[in-house]
Image (cartoon, protein in one colour):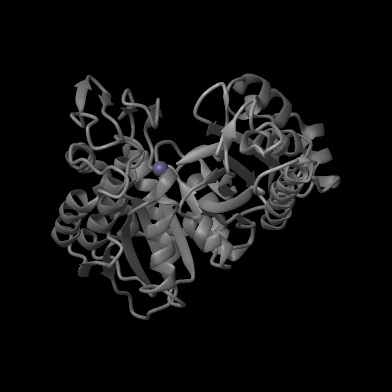
Length: 458
Ligand SMILES: [Zn+2]
């Protein structure tokens, strides 16, 4: 999981109407760094009344769905499942380590997928299979096909095949690349499946458990894209991805478009052929133009020229130059507008350089889309978000709503309510070989996922 911007949220109860509301888009330090300051501000009665009265906070968890998780947490069979996941948390952690020690580089997830399919069978899931793109699926049918929850975690890591995957333990800390992101999610959703079966919980709806491929970077969500284009097309109405550590709920999916732009020309001698069009000049014009693009602060929309290369020597006119650009937004319309503006700038730079040319053939340009993650948002009032809020509350866990780029982006973008949540514990240095996971009280995360799964498949 990549959290682009940890925009925090705080849950408040109005002193006048007693409704619980969420105030989001508050500075990150309110919700993470300076907790004392948050408590002081948010707990003051005037602040709560003001936020509610001015309607700057939106209601959360006040519908029937929101009460659901809290109510069912008290039912005997649900209680049993929550006790169970706590009692076998050490085995969940062992699975997390075991899966992490099977390399799963981008486009190389097959070995981990095979082990995961085995784990799915061992916890009692049915119809376990690996689809054409490499996703692992297993089912837990309910009395009806709907509601149909997809509970997923991702198999792939950001690490190339040659990065050692051994996991070391130092008291409560585990260290290994991918140990939190997302071996934690993989292990936790299997713990939830096992607990549901062991506690004999019958659900009205069904759950499909999935280990997806290609969530990270270059994978470009290819697993979840394939899933909703084929196997689960039109079949699922709610999606939860367990991605990484902690308890944050990602309900806004940051979309991105990534392009590689290549200008090509005849090249030549820097002195003899002066006047020919230069791909490097065109790249320069494009960078200048990109830096002047106007983007909104809300919804947050960004651009970055990340890599540039081209040319052969100081005294040659280049025959080729390219750049890679990353465009992002939490809003699909703003992202599409930015992408259109960028493409127009690519064409303008081409025309300008060709217009200045005194001799030789004109430049050509190729624009390749090398990354495409749709943006999306899941609002309060949807079962997934309200039940997640309710489940956190029922378990006494903190609520933090964030933006991010995860497998949940894809279902969000096609209108399926979706979130990504943490699998408990705490982590640091994700996406680095030093990645670590703190197992202290990590069973609370397993309980959160288990309770949410029951609430959403009920
Ligand atoms: Zn992840």
